[in-house]
Length: 335
Ligand code: NAP
Ligand code: G4F
Image 1 (cartoon, rainbow, N blue to C red):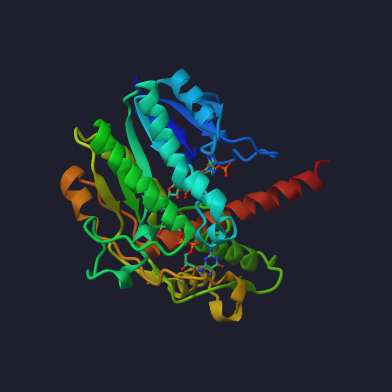
Image 2 (cartoon, rainbow, N blue to C red):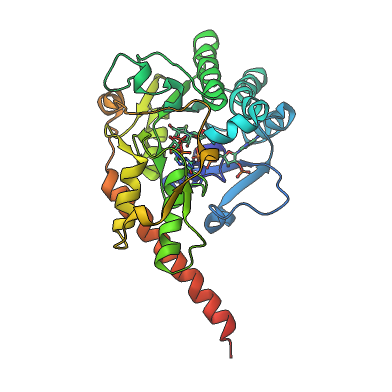
């Protein structure tokens, strides 16, 4: 039985990766950070099967302690302050957790003399958008042009991963993942914000119009469970490397809105308003990726495309909402 350690196990990707590794028969350990309220809802369904440890990517001593205890075969560094807009509000913390956190993890492994295979969660944000590239599709060869504190931190983490690979021969791979979404997506990312609101409209619970920022931004949006399989496949290669996972399609926030509201037979234009506070000091206008290296090396390709993703997310949201309403109804009709 292999042992894996996941930082960021309470997040969208960490929770799907934990499900997948448990399914494969791994012993799964996860790093959780102390929070004043419980935030494990994405992993509660597997609670008894997971080994959870308190630690924090901003605290080297806590990382050393967990790594020395677990001796993992594989480490997936998914922990991060991952919200691009928020990274402008808390740039220092974003650099600490998202950038230096990766360095602390690698350096802890090196000083402990541990040699697991390591996955570093890189992002398409590191490219700053197709407008900063000479290629129609962004590939592993394209230059980075980070346009937020978050993206700067990810570029730093990426280069640390390459350096530990080259300098110390460690098996460290960088995934450069384009946006991937799901019903477990954090509620302040634009896709989930929209699908939640669509469910509120459907059940007549919307409190005023939906406030959004830039509707013209385009993203290469895939389905998160497929991307975590790609992370695992990356680490099963004899040689470490850097790989893009993407769908090869790009769509605007406006298109996402159109399709999501179509699912409930409504026109999005009647339900939204623009909020300048949601604009970013520097925007990444378009992201469109080339996943051919991953496909040719380990056979990964996306299965869910844009329309299917929107449908899945809206349907899950409606079901979730209905379950919630049923629970409230049962609570008030106990007798
Ligand atoms: P997410 O839902 O925001 O989850 C982030 C996770 O990191 C959470 O478990 C969070 O814990 C944890 N975390 C935050 N600060 C930490 C700290 N100081 N120490 C330890 N853990 C900390 O993100 P995601 O969408 O699953 O993404 C996973 C990773 O892939 C992230 O590194 C993200 O930047 C990267 N990525 C994501 C995408 C995407 O489209 N989803 C694309 C490219 C790259 P709490 O639950 O306590 O907050
Ligand atoms: O959903 P978003 O916040 O995701 P963003 O900025 O693309 O970042 C996500 O994907 C990255 C991969 O490329 C990850 F590395 C990162 O961790 C994160 O998972 O915003 C998507 C687009 C942006 O252009 C934003 O300006 O939607 C636009 N947008 C318009 N209105 C909005 C809103 N974004 C958010 N979060 N909230 C809005 O109201």
